[in-house]
Image (cartoon, rainbow, N blue to C red; front, side, top):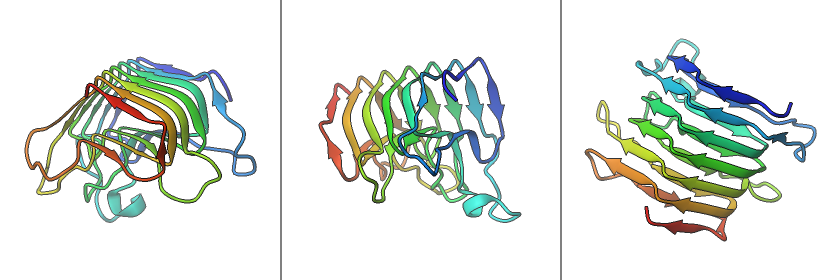
Length: 193
């Protein structure tokens, strides 16, 4: 599929991935081209239970988890409470696995485990994300129930990333990270955050 545009939608208490975009396991060169997620609202008011058949003991949680994208825009969305049972859920916006030409801007992310993640660990032939701009996002991290959130923005196995003019604020427990470069980060600029 190409040209997928999601706008003005509300996702409440989905419990796992609110929007999940996957790849063709037979061909990693195929991309879902020219899409967007705009002006949507994502919220979890409850944390998934550790039992009852939930994926990863209640930690298989994200706002958007998408792979193999090309020329996508994520803008003007709001995410609240995107958290896993053990504070190790994925991000509000998580893009990975051979994605390129990604724009993430003007999103508000409140009280999640992570804000924005580009890439993931593991051996792949190339980059998880090659070419992205992350700008003008507001991310507020907060510890809840004694569990601390991880990163506002994180990158690993990426190339040609621009991270500009974002605000990451942690209201308590300064033990976590703001912006985190984990491994295999190439040709990346971080300015005025």
